[in-house]
Image (cartoon, rainbow, N blue to C red; front, side):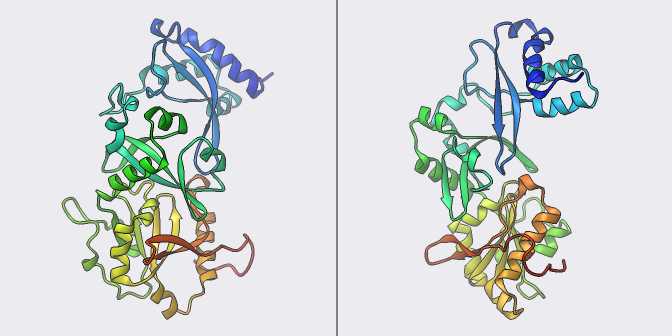
Amino acid sequence: MKMNFEDFKKTIKDKIGEYLTEDYADADMSLSEVKKSGGESYDALMIRKAGEERYSVIPALNLTEAYNKYQNGQSVEQICEDLADVRMNVPIPEGLEKDMFMNFDKVKGKIYPRLVNSETSKDYLITRPHTEVEDLSMVYAVRINENSTGFAEAVIDYDLAKMWGVDVEDLHEAAMSNMEAHEPVFVGLEQAMFGEFPGPGESTFDLDSISDDCPLPLYMLTNKQKTKGAVMALSAKFMDQITAKFGEVYVLPSSVDEVLIMPKSAVADHEMDLQDLARMVQQVNIEAVRPEDRLSDNVYEYDSQTQSLKLAVVAPEQGAGLEMEM
């Protein structure tokens, strides 16, 4: 007879020590729930060696995923062996200093913002400093390492901010400064769909090279890794340059990784309705975006006077109105 999830977690916690090396003999083991932005979560086993700093980077061993493997026939022994291997052999990210998280001055230049949906991430936000922007929230993360295709980050919680002696304004100032020190990627949607991004050494934010003479001017804004790049729409530095070229714009949240920018003049020229745009965003979210990557179904506008993102229209209830052809 298969164990239920609670018994499974207790069994793994009790048994995994048999598969760890001697330097884990006095390790502290605890079960916790790991909340992810977007509302998802999983149960995890945390194994911290004796004397290991609280904010040292250790893997959260995913017991929810392990239980699925158990239900599909994998033995408890094999699961323990695999989890122990992850804990003992996970590589330390390049550039991570042992005491980096203990000193705000050392991490200040590595803090970056992320954008999440406030409602779907409400439990996630309880323990994390954040700045609300309409129905969205900006959280802050320490970037441990990065390359051209992605990065590893640790999201900052209230305990860590308290240890540093900083508040959300300090985190926000550092995050925006660091983000704005790097050019975003701004390309036409058709160009982005075919992967025609600027090459090495080329500017990724050359607005003069982008033509607005196309059937439906629609542009992608993200970061160079195209990961967690929707937050670029909150940069007054970059959005002011975009509106200087295209006039007032609407911002369509494609996912947490990018947004689409559409000039208001194009919406008027094509006699489009804002509700049509909201339905389009909503339908794309349903059909093409993983639930954990969805940012919002709503449409926003950038107010160049206040240099802020504002709600332009709230998406209709799912199922309301006509379905758009995509």
